[in-house]
Length: 342
Image (cartoon, rainbow, N blue to C red; front, side, top):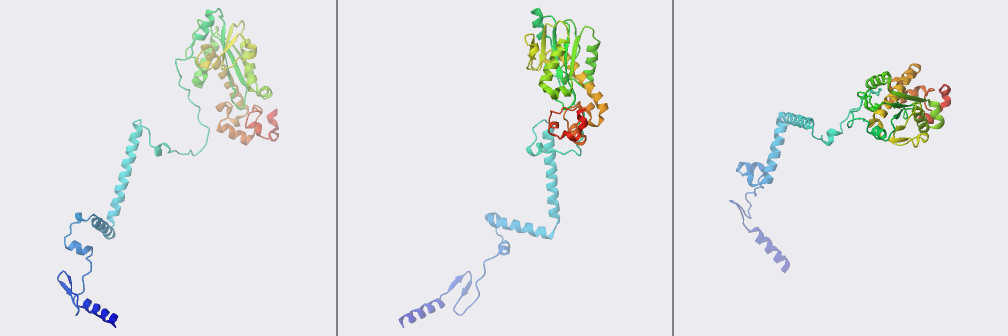
């Protein structure tokens, strides 16, 4: 009974409580319902300063942007146009940055295009000469020691897949001057031909040439053939006092009367002249071979393993001028092309 009386008393006290909310009063008898929390529109109507509430300002801006986008599609178009203009300006700035000689960005540097075809590349231009060019400093040391007939020796054709290896030796007298003589690899094909004709026309210049074909190369390997060709070409010149060899190795038959000069064709006049004689002699031979087997393009690549040459070997098989011990020919089933051994 006491519990029930206490509960009823609390109810009566609650009903008689008066709650003030602005000017509205809620009584036991009932009255005006309490107002809901004002929404965004109510805040705007009352003139609330948006700067006083950053969260509210953000909502208003987003809402305004959505309303504007729904009612007017022109805003989106203008935005895209603005982005396109910015992209063009960035591209132009990057292009100007590269033209000024600066390093391109990572994205720009990796941009590349794939060629439509894989045709044989045009003939390479001659390399730019490095340094002052060949001279006669090596020969002068031997002249001072009484060795007056000093010859230079070089070879051409160690690397190709077809054709011979050619070595040449050249003796250039002390008072003989050859204009523009240089390492044959530093010259264009026309330049080599011109100097070659000049060397051949000079009666004071002596030279020797040795040619070893592909069959001999397959028999004893290219290194031994190169040493053999160098020795024979040097021995073709009479009364030689000393031999200057291009490279890092002296053939055994010439040991004791020869020295090796690394990159000698770019350092010594006699070796440079020998390199031109060897290179032009071999190139002319490859042109003749091309007339016999035009499908391989020997006149263009001179037997080296270019893409065009490799494609021709794959299509037609090797011919008799190909070196059977050189890859990839040595890995092929040569029984399919018996004519390659004739």
